Amino acid sequence: MATISKLESACIVAGGGPAGVMLGFLLARAGVDVIVMEKHADFFRDFRGDTIHPSTLQLMHELGLLDAFLKLPHQEAHHFGLNLGGTVIGADFTELPTVCKYIALMPQWDFLNFLAGQGKRYPGFRLLMSTEVTDLIEEDDRVVGVRATGPDGDVEARAPLVAGTDGRHSTTRDRAGFEVESLGAPMDVLWMRLPRKPEEADEPALIAAAGRILVLINRGDYWQCAYLIPKGGYDELKTKGLAAFRGELAAIAPFSSDRIDTLQDWDQIKLLTVAVDRLRQWYRPGLLCIGDAAHAMSPIGGVGVNLAVQDAVATANLLAAPLKAGTVQLSDLEAVQERRAFPARMTQRFQILAQDNIIQQALDKQADFHPPLLARIGGRIPTVQRLMGRLIGLGVRPEHIHTPDMLASDTPAR
Image: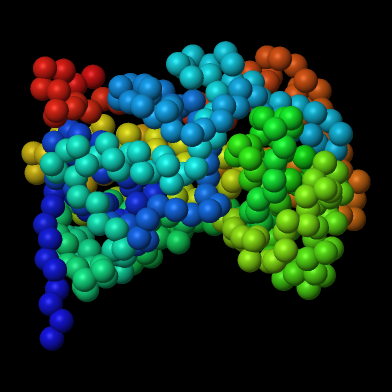
């Protein structure tokens, strides 16, 4: 008979994405015993959100980690340009009230490895890789732990709180029976790489023309490309063949014509099925969902990673002390949703606005694409560009670090 590993902790974090690893790190930093479970063997995913926004860089500064963090390979984007049917508008990050007035373009695996490395400095931080949460343990209508499969077999872990940070396909929210409100999305995204020449522009850009939208993110010697297609249109695209797809890319980005043949196989092109949704209630006794598990975001603005990090900071700020004292109540979990639901709703509202008025129209091959008048006029005004930069770079209600550092006992909590 197979043995079951039994673990105990003050908090179990289900999912090792940005929300999960940041939450685990901050709780351990504050002296809370925490287990983070990540189903994969490492953090390497070729196409994940790679934009670390000024709000997250500011948190690195508040933690005293910014200098070390910026030693990791990255590119800086001080502006973001959008070419909407020939109309170029932009977002300007250069006047944000932050230490770093730019987006850092960095592979997400480097970001997560950095956070995990910081977490391991604290005795209460345990990161279990290749450990997938498969179910919740419930007693008397309360979540008291999780069941998981690990590299050595089954795991049963118990804690006063389970934090569901397992993304848009969350097992924890599914097992909890939470009600999900779907907001819809008119597109899916194809991720791929194209070689980049040193003399080419170094800041991210979005190009939209009738029936096509392409986002280009500088990753040094290659462009990370996001090609937006109508929802459910991937099979039709594949039916037309790879040569036809390369032709579409070359049409929207003529500069790529001399390297488009590097796409030799559909395996080089990864499909991201876009979903925008949110939970009506993020919590129940013993369980709290945050990040994409609570509110799956559209890729518009690249804000998903940073919103998840903000959720983690707010959760640590509100729950570190009661977790350490063993006094977490349902009202504490409710306070997290009250703090973070408004930023999530507002961000999704802006994303839906962009989806309905720009993305959906641009993907309609039957109509000439004309950007909204407000975008055509306002997008050229420096004040509007700075407001765009603030919305993307800082977001709604950015959080700050208020938890203490247990390794710096002479430093009071902020």
